[in-house]
Length: 196
Image (cartoon, rainbow, N blue to C red; front, side, top):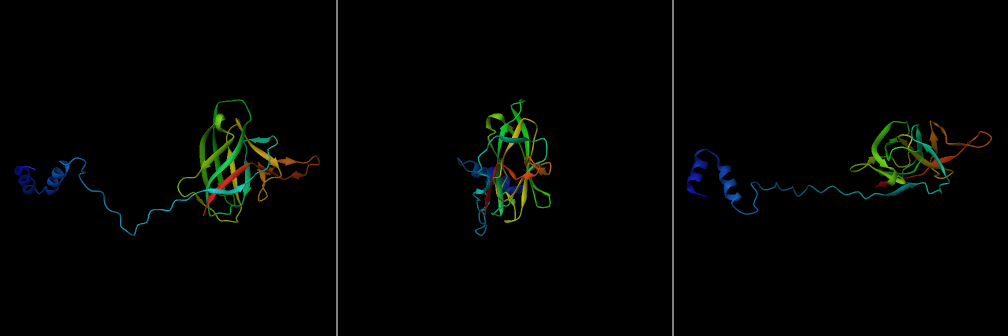
């Protein structure tokens, strides 16, 4: 750096300018180095999700629309809920996509997490709702509910029997009734993914 610039920088109290100019003359150099991370600051641990609760029953054609209050109870075994997959069917003619909202409710019916996403008819067989970051904190062994809402385009697939740790409901009532009017236990097709 020419001595005139050095004198100007010193005379005006702009020592930082001199450092900037001298470092900027080197190819690839930056004006200020990145601050060093303290040795004690550990990088956040990555969480890898794995299947937790799964309804593996074979679908036989039952589904219900998403305009109403469609819910599926489940009991997590892992302390973090990372994602939920639901099985849908295109139930009615309409647009090529719909906006769906998945809400996770605690055992008192209070929302603990909600995701909304646009779903296309081309990719609606298995729809994955993934919670950001470290997912939702849940209490293993405690009942929760999945509530799925949308328009008339898609239907949430259900089966008679199925998942053992919770029931599916439609507007707070059983999905299916026997010929004599008594409720028949039914469940929606879903899968949860959790992490320790």
